[in-house]
Amino acid sequence: MKKHLLILLSVLLVMPLGVAIAGGDAPEAEHQRWHFDGHFGTFDRAAQQRGLKVYREVCAACHGLKRIAFRNLEALGYDEGQVKAIAGEYTVEDGPDDEGDMFERPARPSDRFPSPFANENQAKSANNGALPPDLSLIIKARHHGPDYVYGLLTGYEEAPEGTTLLEGQHWNKYMPGHIIAMAPPVSDDQVTYEDETPQTVEQYSKDVVEFLAWASEPELEERKSTGIKVLIFLLAFAGIMYAIKKKIWASVH
Ligand code: HEC
Image (cartoon, rainbow, N blue to C red; front, top):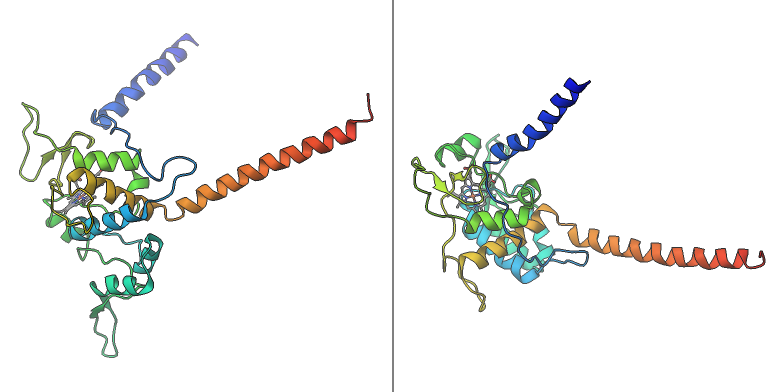
């Protein structure tokens, strides 16, 4: 009996250690204030539109967004014409035509964002053997996704002494294991904003996270507002039940 307990105890003690090693001792990214946080959180449309611009001008060179169709962008406040114009800037493969050949045509609102590479092998060979993941679900796929992705984009540092980086490797504070094959993707003033919003790495990172958070969970606002309505309903219902109970039991003393 004692032996079993000992084994159980040592497993419990060793497990978190294993997790820590697998996690590569990267610290948790600092919590940022997100517009979509909390019970009443909503998306910030202006930030999302800027984030889309950052995605299109920077991240899209390496990362796909295959779950998002151009017409979904209407949720960011674009009208039909604007969505059509955005789609029209992309080329997608279609077909086969009557002769059995595949052909290229401008994208339509019903098309999804085309991936930058034809297949995974091409993506890897263009990136020193590392695969740039599709970003459609990245915010959901990572622990504390918004903070993590923001941390990652702003977390590049000189490698500490004693760490040797191979060609194409970079040191990042928040990447598990610290070594990442993605070069710092954005720098200050790289993307032009049409308003007075600062053109800094921090702002770009915040905006692209706001956009990617929507891509990962387009129904977030609806989910939150339904939650609030259910709560209000339950409260009102509890009140009514209490009143009924009082009335029914009023004569019994
Ligand atoms: C030049 C190509 C390139 C560009 C541009 C690029 N990335 Fe990456 N990204 C990569 C590669 C390659 C990896 C895989 C890194 C690895 O596994 O070490 C990656 C990985 C990632 C990851 C996953 C990290 C993890 O936890 O595994 C995220 C998130 C990410 N990129 C976000 C972005 C965002 C946001 C942008 C635009 C601001 C961007 N990337 C621009 C090449 C790129």
